Image 1 (tube, helix red, strand yellow):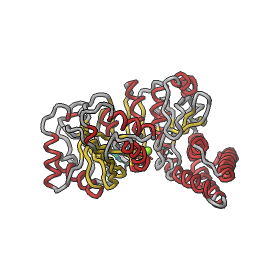
Image 2 (tube, protein in one colour):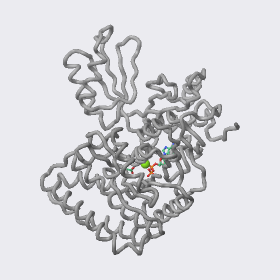
Image 3 (tube, protein in one colour):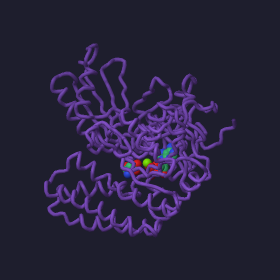
Image 4 (cartoon, helix red, strand yellow):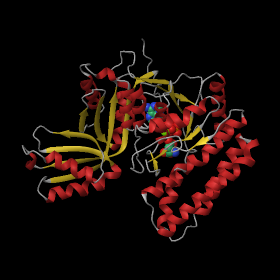
Length: 462
Ligand code: ADP
Ligand code: ASP
Ligand code: MG
């Protein structure tokens, strides 16, 4: 069971988590718990680390450490009063370590990917102590493990590390023996390389931690506890009548999360899918709601389109040049240049004349992409590269689209009726997803139009 930032944000929510764990644990289930940092803490850690490296003094560190102390001590006192004396010194020790590393970053004027990874895990480091103490306060034996102790072995790419299968044995060895006698609390979001160097799994990485642990211990189910009732037909912050889906397939969730649905980390489905483990998404604040089941094959509910998502901050790269016509190797040169600059390509489309290739990338990587492609233009491999930041990508997801005729027609007719201009279209061969690009300001309206077109707010009749 993984609990996200809102679910463990303060004493009141941690007490809810404790009630949930108590219920399932005393009901005879073996449970391992993965927790996130308290809501907002990881953002603050990133902000302070980036600020302190360049600022003339490190005066912001003291007040920041102080605010973390107040927040975590309040949560501890409110959820585990008998353990304050034992746990407060451990919190102090972690705060001191954080203060020291932030001072070192300032003194060296250097924030390496490695030290950044270490710093941004402190939200989980502090919060795990509080949550585990809260369990003990309610009579549930518990101990704390960091991601490395839990056995999460990863690649060395800091900030976006991926789990290695070789870690599974270690996970089994470290977690399974604990389960009969206690509920271990594992710090999400982090792992380590074979050499023991700490890594992080990308933002929202605790979902991924939970899936890696679940697969490692061959769990019966992996539960993601969050602040909404389950996976919905669209982001409830964009579509106010979005509906909770009873069940979705692994592939559908992968497409949704890849295309920005914040509800789950994009890589968190892979470990579960590999082991065919059912994933359930549930609401910590409404635990009686059944939530959403994620499985390999969903019972056919006759719905062609199931959910919609959009990514606001993308950029379109248009590469033009008659030189590309009939010339092998141009695409290779383009993608090699982008990959050398570590630019991740989300969507690709090429006109049949071959004179134009359009790509969609993360807006944050737009400058890196345009620099690396400018070099190709200089070499005469392409003629012109233009960048458009005023776009967003929308994805229409549903496994029922595979083989269903006319879905594309319906999507683009509805958008045309709403006077929304589509700049680029892409459909994966899995046909679980049709994605397209519109002007940034049209994004939410495009989602609204299609939510209505496919009647996603209405209950399914079968
Ligand atoms: P946690 O802290 O529990 O990991 P997140 O904030 O990362 O929670 O993810 C949950 C949020 O994801 C929800 O509050 C919701 O606003 C957002 N979200 C975006 N798309 C969807 C969707 N399709 N279904 C459910 N929630 C979504
Ligand atoms: N605390 C980390 C983040 O904010 C990981 C997570 O919450 O899943 O990204
Ligand atoms: Mg999350």
